[in-house]
Image 1 (spheres, helix red, strand yellow):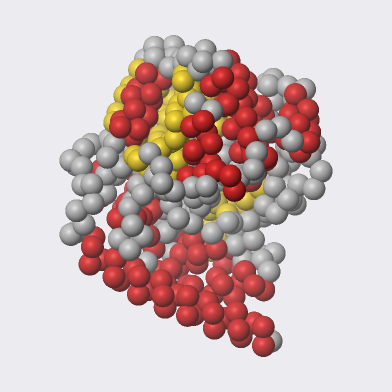
Image 2: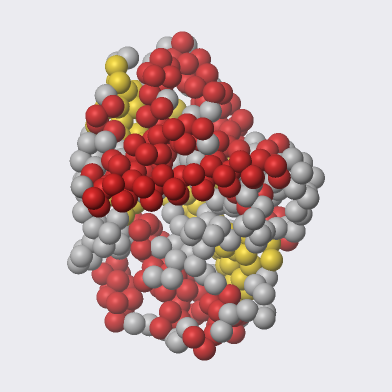
Amino acid sequence: MKKLIKISGVSVLGLIGVIYLATAGFLWWSETTLRVEPVNESIYSRSKDLHHIELIDDGLLSLKKRIELIDSAKNSIDLEFFIYEIDIAGQIITQKLIEAARRGVKVRLLVDFAAPVFVLKTAYAKQLKKNNIEVKYYNTTNNLRIVSVQHRSHRKLLIIDNTVAMTGGRNIGDDYFNLSSHYNFLDSDIVIRGPIVDSILKSFNLYWMSNYADHPDPKQGDVALLGEVFFTKTKASEEILDSIKNLPLSEGSTYKSGKCNDIEFITDFPGVSLNNRQVFKYLSLALNEAKSKIYGESPYFVLRPDGISLLKELSAKGIKQDYLTNSLYSTDAFYTVSALTNSLGSIRDTGVNLYAYSGDKPIDYLSSINGVSERWGTHSKRAVIDNQHFIIGTYNVDPRSANLNSEVLIICRNSPELATHMSSSIKTRISKAWPVVESGKSYFTNLIKSASIYQVIKFIVVLPVAELFKFLL
């Protein structure tokens, strides 16, 4: 009991600090002058030419595909990620990039500088530069600029030779590739070949050349402290590579290839201004095309008032909507479940069905790695409309993606084979979820089902703050 009281006390003090910092940040919201760039509409491109598409749901298959793409590169590899971990997955990808650079491929890596998740520090960037890999950091603003520092590039891109692009929910880290011993993400990727890749590359170049992108400070980072482990093959990384070597990239529940003759690419311009965040507008337009049914999946489900209104309008038109998100047990961000709890009444009134993932090992589990965690949570950002059109990208259903982060959205229309595959994948995950809002009723207890006492205490303590500052979640 004393331990719980102590934990609660520390949590309360921490929340008071958060409130203070967030309030102070408001003072800078409209006054910040840090690298303010012109307000722009989103980068938008639509093509009705033939595009070859691959949809990948399994983490090990996704890692295998990334390796194949990097190995196939002849001229250039461009990568952009919100998180680039220093773990086995990061080690494997990095080694493959070094091999590509050594055979003359130009490699550029843009990594977001968000303090809570940033680990690819200057010493690593220096070592990568020695191996002919150029690294830049996105938005290195001082953390004292509380709101400006909230603007992050949440984009995830791998572009090979300006001919093939891969995007979706996965960052670079063990959690995203079925390799973590503490927690793993259920996620989804799309691989695209076709003319739209040129627009995707142009967006990468825009971010790479932006005033927000900096080379690491050459005066910082002692390479000698690193050793060579991260940059050389190890027994652990070799075992992973051996285990995925024979995994088939063949048609199945976690892999599907097909064609798209009507594809859109949308992403935000760099910049602090809220007016630079336009992806939600295009997402709304796509959802409004629905005639009967929408399946959706997002790791967080924190709606702005316009999001609530959108769901209501769709229901009023007779559109059935089923959405999957995380429970308190399956999430990696407990405070988002607190914010969701505060909105349960509003969500119930929209007429949608909302399900919380149980945290169980997925049905279509391909991992053969020993010691992988039994706790899983969804991290996919996708939707299917009428089993005809699908949406996939980096956009979470939360105010942070709408208000603060730069995101990527891919919309494919009139591709029933691929859309049906994606909806089947979402329904499979829903089969291992609990109803939170269903048929006009809400089930709060399912949101916290299976959660530990510690998770529940944090969840309860943060409830009032999550409501007050959900625009930052």
